[in-house]
Length: 435
Image (tube, rainbow, N blue to C red):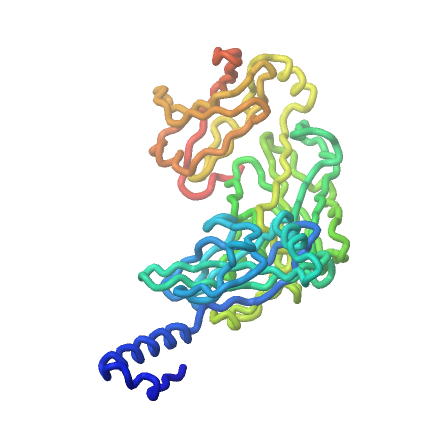
């Protein structure tokens, strides 16, 4: 900034000083180092979704707000940085939506999941011009300071070799057509595998795990790929029984079928519901690497191969008396409880109830009561939904007392058409005892 004193002699000296001081303050404010991001740009698939791991650093009493995609930028004055021109807006991402999370030392790990609709709008809006567009994240001061806007350049591509290795869709199925597989104790389940849609190319590393009846269920963070977690969270996800490991190369084809391990490795001795988990580890991917130091944070280069903006699905199978018994149950109007098992001892936290539905029910009512019939929880599920995941406060409401649960089948008028038998369970401190 330069001030021409020769052109300001008409001003009183005190006024000139105030004007000059104001200009100096404004110029100093604009010179303050803004929040930085790494990488500053990424290749985006214009034919589908893309997910990119971004590290923002240099936060000073600031929290992330919404993000926007747009084709043009404009000065954010009186705030800092550049923001989206509202005339070229392609879409917005509300604050708190998705697996993004604040980290340590003033960093923010942002999982930028570009939906196909945004990429397509950017492509169509570009016309004959280069189709580059922008992702802009806004940060809000908690101490009354100005907002800051940080932009990332998005370069549309075909989602091939120069794009980050990211998972955009995952399904896990058995080789048989069934909503939930029911098998008899000791029976070998059919083969299973996963179908993955992805961008980029590189190595897919990870393992198959199984959750046995009575074990604590995985939460949402447990089901994310490792590359989706902040540096501090990596290595802290709950582990279960390992079935097999995999390490395969993904060519830039966009879709692959990953076979599961030998189904003979699946446990079937204990009656109840089992979950098969696909656990994907972070891999070395140059296109998706993030450098926290370059963004003003700390730590070494962060490998983000196989990042995903969603928790991976789990494959469920139920061990009981087999399909013939299931068929006879479905012919009845009485729902049949499956999980938790009778007299189960559970760790505090979320509990997932499962049952075989009544074919005559329009919806089901889950009832959880104490032994003196005091209601602790009551929930309704529509037709086709035969499970319920409780809030985490159920153990607190139990206050150490044993509980009972059952499922009531209701018709369109709300009349009872069948009730399951009662099953008991209780919460214990720490992990449930081994079976």
